[in-house]
View (cartoon, rainbow, N blue to C red):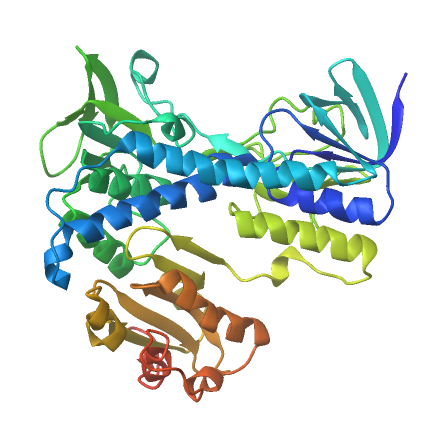
Length: 462
């Protein structure tokens, strides 16, 4: 016999708890289903643990650079077990907080188990069958395992299983030169491992402009990371207790050999075992749930939020999905996915903050584009901190004077970029921020200077 609910939420990732809390506030009887860990990827294997590890790696690196700042600490010894315990403690604090929050929702019942559609808006969880007028899918994604020759013959790690590592690998080979792979590359190099990054594409970070990718590569190579791009043909094999990665590159030896292998080649949605066909829910060829601009699926009364809908792969976009759904359902406030501006960061040191269009996208837009660029060596606060790697670049529509995008690579760039992002959302001309009086000494105070030296983008009419 079916149990009736007003709403069902599948998945306790970033959007799930906030949505459950709003449904609770609306006095809707809600079933909240999670098959594994509260908080999903962000809390358990993504943002929170990895940025905790990044913080440890940075502290270690600063200690090694002590002489530059006028102090010595002696030999820096990394206790990876202690690093992991610190990370686990931060994660536990977050997951405990979520559990307490959910437990306090009087109209929400938390169910543990795997959810599967058996009919439209009908969900099976173990021996229980649930029905509701509204169903919200928030199942997230997982690391993709590529079909590389030999992948089934060698031991490998993913971003999830890396969270269990409590030792420093002698030589970590990372297949994948994008955001996840590069963050792990730098942190483990700083923990003391030899690190080699193998990327099939001609450059790292395929979506970034060439000069951004080149400077990031230079930053990582200064840390002692070996980078092999253009690895058009990759094969894996086991050699005694080591892993050999065969690469076909224009430059360098034909193999990269290491003690451990991390596969960081993208993610896939957790949609293949949900019974979506029985629920009348369409997916695209990659398994992402098709949604409209307000996150409704092809099935009446069913919404998809977070990584599984293919409309964003970040914690902040997942939470914004919740905001869009809640605003449309309960607040008579029409919010849409198309309203948001692309924004993300790469958390190497120094970080990359990216918003809006890249230069390549701006060139294709047909707009009269102006560009401003400044090396971090010109930023007083960066020189004072001894952190002068990177540069800042901003793109402007020469006719409307509105900001089109920015790539800030440097000290605190992941925070500073929001001063530009907020002006973009306000749809104000760049002169709004150019004329602002910023605090000295900061990195942000150079943004008006950057905007005061705009030039026509090379190759476009001025």
